[in-house]
Image 1: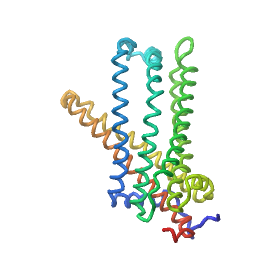
Image 2: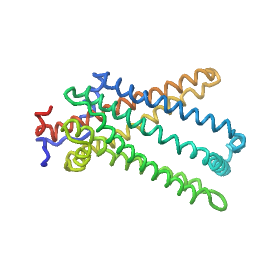
Image 3: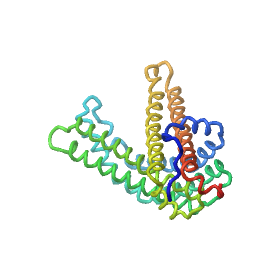
Image 4: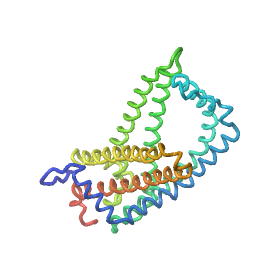
Length: 307
Protein backbone atom coordinates (compact mmCIF):
# COMPACT_ATOMS: atom_id res chain seq x y z
CA UNK A 1 0.00 0.00 0.00
CA UNK A 2 1.19 3.49 -0.71
CA UNK A 3 1.60 5.46 2.44
CA UNK A 4 -0.32 8.64 3.15
CA UNK A 5 1.92 11.67 3.47
CA UNK A 6 1.02 14.91 5.17
CA UNK A 7 1.62 18.20 3.39
CA UNK A 8 4.33 19.23 5.85
CA UNK A 9 6.85 16.81 7.37
CA UNK A 10 6.32 16.10 11.07
CA UNK A 11 9.06 14.82 13.35
CA UNK A 12 8.18 11.88 15.57
CA UNK A 13 8.89 13.86 18.72
CA UNK A 14 7.37 17.13 17.50
CA UNK A 15 3.93 16.28 18.89
CA UNK A 16 5.21 14.42 21.95
CA UNK A 17 4.25 17.21 24.36
CA UNK A 18 0.76 17.21 22.88
CA UNK A 19 0.48 13.45 23.37
CA UNK A 20 1.73 13.78 26.96
CA UNK A 21 -0.89 16.45 27.63
CA UNK A 22 -3.61 14.32 26.05
CA UNK A 23 -2.77 11.34 28.26
CA UNK A 24 -2.51 13.58 31.33
CA UNK A 25 -6.03 14.84 30.68
CA UNK A 26 -7.30 11.25 30.66
CA UNK A 27 -6.04 9.71 33.91
CA UNK A 28 -8.17 6.61 33.37
CA UNK A 29 -5.73 5.49 30.66
CA UNK A 30 -2.80 5.55 33.09
CA UNK A 31 -4.97 3.98 35.80
CA UNK A 32 -5.70 0.97 33.56
CA UNK A 33 -2.01 0.68 32.65
CA UNK A 34 -0.96 0.81 36.30
CA UNK A 35 -3.73 -1.61 37.22
CA UNK A 36 -2.78 -4.44 34.87
CA UNK A 37 0.97 -3.99 35.40
CA UNK A 38 0.71 -4.05 39.17
CA UNK A 39 -1.90 -6.83 39.11
CA UNK A 40 0.70 -9.06 37.48
CA UNK A 41 3.86 -7.44 38.81
CA UNK A 42 3.17 -7.52 42.56
CA UNK A 43 2.49 -11.30 42.76
CA UNK A 44 5.49 -11.99 40.52
CA UNK A 45 7.78 -9.86 42.70
CA UNK A 46 6.45 -11.51 45.85
CA UNK A 47 7.07 -14.95 44.36
CA UNK A 48 10.61 -13.98 43.33
CA UNK A 49 11.25 -12.53 46.81
CA UNK A 50 9.99 -15.72 48.43
CA UNK A 51 12.28 -17.87 46.29
CA UNK A 52 15.24 -15.59 47.03
CA UNK A 53 14.55 -15.90 50.75
CA UNK A 54 14.46 -19.68 50.46
CA UNK A 55 17.79 -19.73 48.61
CA UNK A 56 19.39 -17.48 51.22
CA UNK A 57 17.94 -19.60 54.03
CA UNK A 58 19.45 -22.76 52.55
CA UNK A 59 22.68 -21.10 51.45
CA UNK A 60 23.41 -18.07 53.69
CA UNK A 61 25.51 -15.15 52.51
CA UNK A 62 28.20 -16.11 55.02
CA UNK A 63 28.77 -19.42 53.25
CA UNK A 64 29.26 -17.66 49.89
CA UNK A 65 32.01 -15.38 51.16
CA UNK A 66 29.96 -12.23 50.58
CA UNK A 67 30.65 -10.87 54.07
CA UNK A 68 34.39 -10.97 53.46
CA UNK A 69 34.27 -8.85 50.29
CA UNK A 70 36.96 -6.16 50.49
CA UNK A 71 35.05 -2.96 49.76
CA UNK A 72 38.27 -0.92 49.95
CA UNK A 73 39.99 -2.76 47.11
CA UNK A 74 37.86 -3.03 43.95
CA UNK A 75 40.41 -5.29 42.19
CA UNK A 76 40.08 -7.84 44.98
CA UNK A 77 36.35 -7.24 45.50
CA UNK A 78 35.46 -8.02 41.88
CA UNK A 79 37.12 -11.44 42.13
CA UNK A 80 35.32 -12.10 45.42
CA UNK A 81 31.97 -11.05 43.93
CA UNK A 82 32.58 -13.35 40.96
CA UNK A 83 33.03 -16.17 43.46
CA UNK A 84 29.76 -15.24 45.18
CA UNK A 85 27.95 -15.30 41.82
CA UNK A 86 29.49 -18.67 40.92
CA UNK A 87 28.30 -20.02 44.30
CA UNK A 88 24.68 -18.93 43.82
CA UNK A 89 24.37 -19.36 40.05
CA UNK A 90 23.35 -23.06 40.00
CA UNK A 91 20.75 -22.51 42.74
CA UNK A 92 19.29 -19.47 40.93
CA UNK A 93 19.18 -21.32 37.61
CA UNK A 94 17.43 -24.27 39.26
CA UNK A 95 14.65 -21.93 40.41
CA UNK A 96 14.45 -20.10 37.08
CA UNK A 97 13.90 -23.37 35.20
CA UNK A 98 10.43 -23.71 36.74
CA UNK A 99 9.77 -20.06 37.64
CA UNK A 100 10.08 -18.57 34.15
CA UNK A 101 7.55 -20.98 32.57
CA UNK A 102 5.11 -19.80 35.25
CA UNK A 103 5.58 -16.05 35.30
CA UNK A 104 6.17 -15.43 31.57
CA UNK A 105 2.81 -16.85 30.38
CA UNK A 106 1.06 -15.09 33.27
CA UNK A 107 2.59 -11.76 32.26
CA UNK A 108 1.75 -12.35 28.58
CA UNK A 109 -1.92 -13.03 29.34
CA UNK A 110 -2.39 -10.14 31.77
CA UNK A 111 -0.47 -7.68 29.57
CA UNK A 112 -2.50 -8.68 26.49
CA UNK A 113 -5.80 -8.08 28.26
CA UNK A 114 -4.56 -4.89 29.90
CA UNK A 115 -3.13 -3.41 26.71
CA UNK A 116 -6.35 -4.20 24.85
CA UNK A 117 -8.33 -2.40 27.58
CA UNK A 118 -6.06 0.66 27.35
CA UNK A 119 -6.47 0.83 23.56
CA UNK A 120 -10.23 0.34 23.81
CA UNK A 121 -10.44 3.12 26.40
CA UNK A 122 -8.31 5.33 24.15
CA UNK A 123 -10.40 4.53 21.04
CA UNK A 124 -13.87 3.30 22.18
CA UNK A 125 -14.82 1.90 18.75
CA UNK A 126 -12.09 -0.76 18.93
CA UNK A 127 -13.02 -4.37 19.59
CA UNK A 128 -11.87 -6.54 22.50
CA UNK A 129 -9.66 -9.34 21.11
CA UNK A 130 -7.63 -10.79 24.00
CA UNK A 131 -6.69 -14.07 22.27
CA UNK A 132 -5.07 -12.31 19.30
CA UNK A 133 -3.41 -9.85 21.68
CA UNK A 134 -1.92 -12.75 23.64
CA UNK A 135 -0.23 -14.00 20.47
CA UNK A 136 1.31 -10.59 19.75
CA UNK A 137 2.39 -10.11 23.35
CA UNK A 138 4.01 -13.55 23.28
CA UNK A 139 6.00 -12.50 20.19
CA UNK A 140 7.04 -9.28 21.97
CA UNK A 141 8.15 -11.29 25.01
CA UNK A 142 10.11 -13.69 22.81
CA UNK A 143 12.02 -10.77 21.25
CA UNK A 144 12.69 -9.35 24.72
CA UNK A 145 13.98 -12.74 25.89
CA UNK A 146 16.23 -13.03 22.83
CA UNK A 147 17.62 -9.54 23.44
CA UNK A 148 18.27 -10.30 27.11
CA UNK A 149 19.92 -13.61 26.18
CA UNK A 150 22.25 -11.78 23.81
CA UNK A 151 23.10 -9.16 26.44
CA UNK A 152 23.72 -11.77 29.13
CA UNK A 153 25.97 -13.73 26.78
CA UNK A 154 27.96 -10.59 25.99
CA UNK A 155 28.37 -9.88 29.72
CA UNK A 156 29.70 -13.42 30.23
CA UNK A 157 32.21 -12.80 27.45
CA UNK A 158 33.32 -9.50 29.00
CA UNK A 159 33.74 -11.13 32.42
CA UNK A 160 35.68 -14.07 30.95
CA UNK A 161 38.09 -11.82 29.02
CA UNK A 162 38.60 -9.10 31.64
CA UNK A 163 37.87 -10.58 35.09
CA UNK A 164 38.51 -14.34 35.02
CA UNK A 165 42.05 -13.94 33.71
CA UNK A 166 45.46 -14.72 35.19
CA UNK A 167 46.84 -11.88 37.22
CA UNK A 168 45.11 -8.59 38.00
CA UNK A 169 41.59 -8.14 36.54
CA UNK A 170 41.09 -5.39 33.96
CA UNK A 171 38.35 -3.37 35.67
CA UNK A 172 38.61 -0.40 33.32
CA UNK A 173 38.23 -2.57 30.24
CA UNK A 174 35.40 -4.49 31.89
CA UNK A 175 33.52 -1.28 32.71
CA UNK A 176 34.00 0.15 29.21
CA UNK A 177 32.77 -2.98 27.47
CA UNK A 178 29.93 -3.53 29.94
CA UNK A 179 28.63 0.03 29.48
CA UNK A 180 29.12 -0.02 25.70
CA UNK A 181 27.38 -3.38 25.19
CA UNK A 182 24.56 -2.62 27.65
CA UNK A 183 23.74 0.67 25.93
CA UNK A 184 24.11 -1.02 22.56
CA UNK A 185 21.61 -3.76 23.34
CA UNK A 186 19.26 -1.25 24.95
CA UNK A 187 19.40 0.97 21.87
CA UNK A 188 18.94 -2.00 19.54
CA UNK A 189 15.86 -3.04 21.51
CA UNK A 190 14.43 0.48 21.31
CA UNK A 191 15.06 0.64 17.56
CA UNK A 192 13.69 -2.83 16.73
CA UNK A 193 10.84 -3.48 19.16
CA UNK A 194 8.55 -0.85 17.60
CA UNK A 195 7.35 -3.43 15.05
CA UNK A 196 5.91 -5.62 17.79
CA UNK A 197 4.59 -2.58 19.66
CA UNK A 198 2.67 -1.20 16.68
CA UNK A 199 1.29 -4.61 15.64
CA UNK A 200 -1.56 -4.60 18.24
CA UNK A 201 -2.52 -1.08 17.14
CA UNK A 202 -2.67 -2.17 13.49
CA UNK A 203 -4.59 -5.34 14.39
CA UNK A 204 -7.33 -3.47 16.25
CA UNK A 205 -7.54 -0.34 14.11
CA UNK A 206 -7.45 -2.19 10.78
CA UNK A 207 -9.35 -5.28 11.97
CA UNK A 208 -6.62 -7.67 10.88
CA UNK A 209 -5.51 -11.01 12.24
CA UNK A 210 -2.53 -11.13 14.58
CA UNK A 211 -0.28 -12.67 11.91
CA UNK A 212 -1.40 -10.20 9.24
CA UNK A 213 -0.85 -7.21 11.54
CA UNK A 214 2.62 -8.47 12.44
CA UNK A 215 3.53 -8.77 8.76
CA UNK A 216 2.01 -5.37 7.95
CA UNK A 217 4.00 -3.73 10.76
CA UNK A 218 7.15 -4.48 8.74
CA UNK A 219 5.72 -2.90 5.56
CA UNK A 220 4.54 0.52 6.69
CA UNK A 221 6.88 2.62 4.58
CA UNK A 222 9.99 4.51 5.58
CA UNK A 223 8.20 7.69 6.69
CA UNK A 224 5.87 5.89 9.11
CA UNK A 225 8.49 3.47 10.45
CA UNK A 226 10.90 6.35 10.95
CA UNK A 227 8.41 8.07 13.25
CA UNK A 228 7.79 4.84 15.18
CA UNK A 229 11.50 4.14 15.64
CA UNK A 230 12.10 7.74 16.71
CA UNK A 231 9.32 7.65 19.31
CA UNK A 232 10.50 4.28 20.60
CA UNK A 233 14.08 5.52 20.93
CA UNK A 234 12.99 8.69 22.73
CA UNK A 235 10.87 6.66 25.14
CA UNK A 236 13.90 4.48 25.84
CA UNK A 237 15.93 7.59 26.67
CA UNK A 238 13.10 8.83 28.88
CA UNK A 239 13.18 5.54 30.81
CA UNK A 240 16.92 5.92 31.42
CA UNK A 241 16.30 9.50 32.60
CA UNK A 242 13.60 8.25 35.00
CA UNK A 243 15.98 5.66 36.42
CA UNK A 244 18.67 8.29 36.97
CA UNK A 245 16.15 10.68 38.53
CA UNK A 246 14.86 7.97 40.88
CA UNK A 247 18.45 7.15 41.90
CA UNK A 248 19.11 10.84 42.61
CA UNK A 249 15.97 11.05 44.77
CA UNK A 250 17.03 7.89 46.62
CA UNK A 251 20.56 9.14 47.26
CA UNK A 252 19.65 12.73 48.18
CA UNK A 253 18.94 12.08 51.90
CA UNK A 254 22.02 9.86 52.47
CA UNK A 255 24.19 12.73 53.85
CA UNK A 256 21.49 13.29 56.47
CA UNK A 257 20.97 9.62 57.34
CA UNK A 258 22.11 10.09 60.96
CA UNK A 259 19.54 12.82 61.55
CA UNK A 260 16.70 11.22 59.58
CA UNK A 261 17.10 7.63 60.72
CA UNK A 262 16.60 4.39 58.85
CA UNK A 263 12.80 4.57 58.71
CA UNK A 264 12.84 7.90 56.88
CA UNK A 265 15.32 6.55 54.34
CA UNK A 266 13.08 3.57 53.69
CA UNK A 267 10.16 5.93 53.05
CA UNK A 268 12.25 7.96 50.59
CA UNK A 269 13.40 4.82 48.78
CA UNK A 270 9.85 3.49 48.56
CA UNK A 271 8.61 6.87 47.28
CA UNK A 272 11.39 6.95 44.65
CA UNK A 273 10.46 3.46 43.46
CA UNK A 274 6.79 4.44 43.28
CA UNK A 275 7.69 7.58 41.33
CA UNK A 276 9.62 5.55 38.76
CA UNK A 277 6.91 2.92 38.36
CA UNK A 278 4.06 5.41 37.94
CA UNK A 279 6.05 7.67 35.62
CA UNK A 280 7.16 4.68 33.54
CA UNK A 281 3.55 3.50 33.17
CA UNK A 282 2.49 7.01 32.19
CA UNK A 283 5.09 7.19 29.40
CA UNK A 284 4.10 3.71 28.21
CA UNK A 285 0.62 5.10 27.56
CA UNK A 286 2.14 8.21 25.92
CA UNK A 287 4.04 5.98 23.50
CA UNK A 288 0.88 4.03 22.71
CA UNK A 289 -0.99 7.30 22.14
CA UNK A 290 1.75 8.51 19.79
CA UNK A 291 1.58 5.25 17.82
CA UNK A 292 -2.20 5.57 17.42
CA UNK A 293 -1.99 9.20 16.31
CA UNK A 294 0.73 8.49 13.75
CA UNK A 295 -1.34 5.58 12.43
CA UNK A 296 -4.20 8.04 11.91
CA UNK A 297 -1.83 10.42 10.12
CA UNK A 298 -0.31 7.89 7.73
CA UNK A 299 -2.99 5.21 7.34
CA UNK A 300 -6.19 6.57 8.88
CA UNK A 301 -7.73 7.88 5.65
CA UNK A 302 -7.90 4.50 3.95
CA UNK A 303 -9.51 2.90 7.03
CA UNK A 304 -11.82 5.80 7.89
CA UNK A 305 -14.96 3.64 7.72
CA UNK A 306 -13.57 1.41 10.50
CA UNK A 307 -13.00 4.32 12.90
